[in-house]
Length: 156
View (cartoon, rainbow, N blue to C red):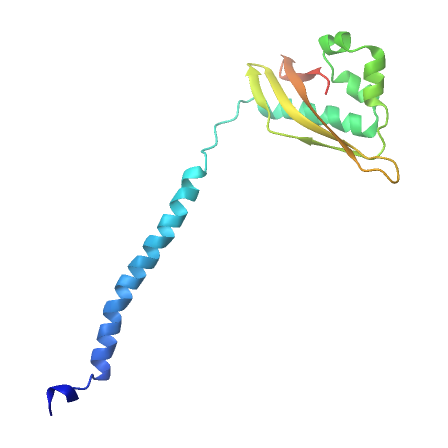
């Protein structure tokens, strides 16, 4: 047998494939980590919510439910004296008048100062039969009135 006629046996071929498999696996894992690390860096740790956040959000939601159903009586109960004084009776009545097909979106609120939150709101008012719904971007301010009672201090 000459040098040119040396045959590779199946066992040695398998051995060489195993040696190639390790670098391929390492390269694959490295590439996966390179793509996943930027995604993990973008995830912000969630801050602990202030204990008043949930009841404030619930008060904003109750007011918007009253608006959606045209229930002025339930909505008026949720307003602070300041909100009632700063908005005329006509404005309050117009706000709670039945808007027809409507919906709302409440975004994540922010703490303005202890006991006072502002929630960005989108009011979606369905149009007439052939018109498109309208969106109105506004906000609601909710305050703690004492004993963990929350009321709306600014109408949207």
